[in-house]
Length: 110
Image (cartoon, rainbow, N blue to C red; front, top):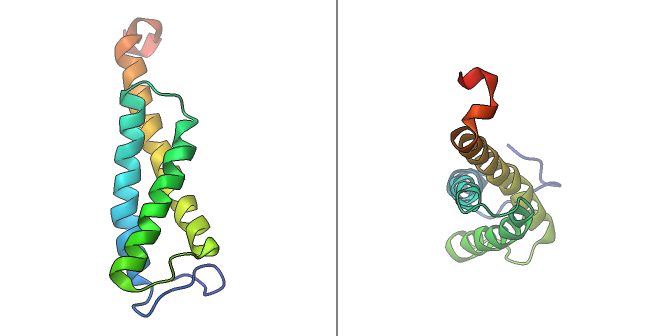
């Protein structure tokens, strides 16, 4: 799935990365991005929350699957997976908000 120089897989293999980082963390990131946009917060907060969520994902890898907790390489990969998903949730929600708030400005809405 992923080369070993990019992501250091634990004893359970790469399925843990798929389960924890992509499915659980990715879903959480997407919903977090939506929550940031729903409360009209600025987009730069995605960076802060991505780092915090990356730490939480690393802890789940460590606590449940006996992977290395303080691995900078794995942390960076986790954040690089989570941040775009959070930004996608933010962008889709913000586009919906703008269309609802300012639909009169868009020619396609008429």
